[in-house]
Image (cartoon, rainbow over all chains, first blue to last red; front, side, top):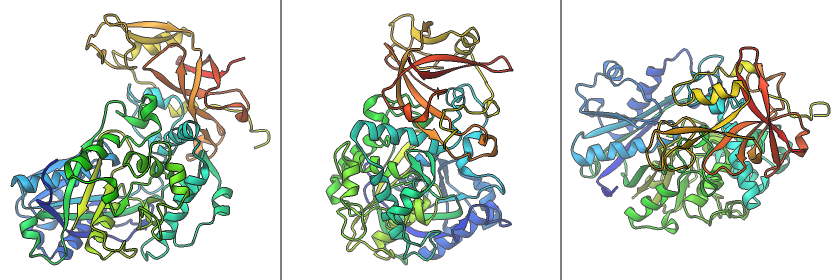
Length: 388
Length: 146
């Protein structure tokens, strides 16, 4: 995409980060409204300025939001297909809508609210049976972790990656959450605790799994021109990309990726386009907010995004490279999905904006470019670069 | 894990079979314990399981070719934790991706069953065994080859 710095994130907002199921009796729509209102206030805009919505992962109802929020007119409403893979793709869509003049102020909202008694971790046991899903459902794969465990196992086999690397992802992410008041987990995680943690889906233990939370969050984008006069330092959309290659395809619900792609995050082509169109290299990225639903997928994204070579992700993290303090590329400074909270990518986007503003709690000094990624999942997957 | 150290299998209730034009031949053949794989009748390459077209040449002339089910474990996981109550009696079980001998372009998602968990590793040779459910559905599963 070549609309560098034509649009910027000017507002962010979120509800508190609830433990799964504990946001009730607030409703789904109510939670989104609260996040959107907070984001407009953060930006110094009126809710009446909003004239566009850009969603991902099933989105929500634009008309319903307009009713509750009194938004007079919408000129853009779209959604990225797929699930969490497309999260930052919604920011790309918003930026394109703004750059093209389709809309002036576009909101990217997301809400995750667990049903009382149900949990996201067993989602595949609740989805409808379809002919294409039969091939994996027959194998008893009921939670996302069951699939990602097989990618991790293959990575270990192919490259000699050790559980110590997954442990380091979990520990360093926890370290970052400790200073965050909204984080769900704020006690340090030791290596001993990690290795004593119950095995859930070998090789993934409890600490390799993300949390399950109720959260609504929202980003507000407008043109670079208008952004200059608003309350916050703009986080410009330097570049964003959504899609991926056939070899990755449906990813985990297919598992027929050829050897080169199986033990990866499916983000290889996204990274290539992202850097090339922005005219930068991985060395120019100051902080990486990598979708960490499962710790091994951080390792594989580090490879796909060129912070280290293919197969060397394990050693790279074990050497301390992703630490906020002293790492060559600080990762998930907000505590990520593993320790802060999980809401399908919105928390990573919010942290990316704060890093560029210079207001993050774990602020990377003079951060000028932040990478934010969508989930390694079925296509489309997505990535974006925010910049000063 | 002492007496549970054998790979069990996921419960039937997790999986209701739905078929369509392009997957029905696979599941019908399974009923008579034949593992059939889709191959393009025009360009002779393996097609995606369940696809309506050959992705190589876009032909819809898809033939179903029997395979003897010998292959290797490409990757696997051991499910230890019953994330939903219906898994309680089924853990530990082993979902696996199976590479079939001589087949390029199709890997099967299945289970490795009836063997000690510690014997299962990536690259291990497997052979096919059929599991017949009470409702008439048969599932291809794998065990370590002798």
